[in-house]
Image (cartoon, rainbow, N blue to C red):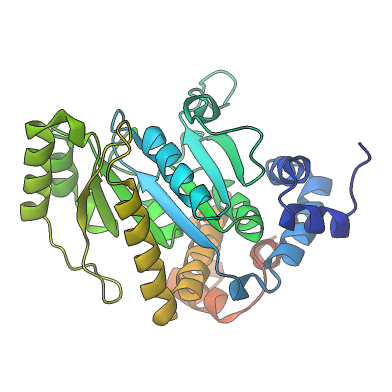
Length: 320
């Protein structure tokens, strides 16, 4: 297969061609200067007019063993029955040797490889504080250009995975019945950020009902963003129960965000934070001070309509 030029690649991505999607994601993962230049051009073309589409960015997080991958696979089945295309970025723990993803969600998610309406990519978290590697946001922009729903499933290895709540339009926390993790997450304040809570494995019976009751009673149900009351749901990915209701609530939250014109605002805000985090990693606090400080730079980024890498490279060049 001959390499596609940028215009052909953009068209192929929007048509959800697997080879084009894989090529674009690989390009974003390539740190060589020539690849970075191509990635800037690609994202500029993909982000043009992207705010006008109705694509959804959904995050799934929660402790290990809660059944996030099984729940994701069940949601994909429901969404496909509703005629929606789905792209998944499944963030796995990193190998300390190769840096690659260890668990391989593409193997755990029982979705058809012949279904062109579904595309799953496993990514390594690469030890990033916050649970998401730097590549996840740019890759999400590619997926949003191609799919009705882009879903980020996080690695689930600790209490620091709050990046996903900042990044996604809708964040769903999956609780494990009877594990005690939910209480710890409440104490850590992690459960203040998701828009939806779901207790998976309701087929476990009494222990699942007790966890559902504890979460419903212990947490504040009013979300700090928009007019939204956080629902606490029960589901079983294994039995397929509660999945339709969960998909309905996710759609309802998206509708609320659209009605309040919050989606584009959220994405601009996270894009600014992503840029500042990368600049801090490269230039330190002194670099951000030279730009005018964190708050001032963030405000400037959110008032400009430039694409991700255009903004990032412009600030890098100022510091260089």
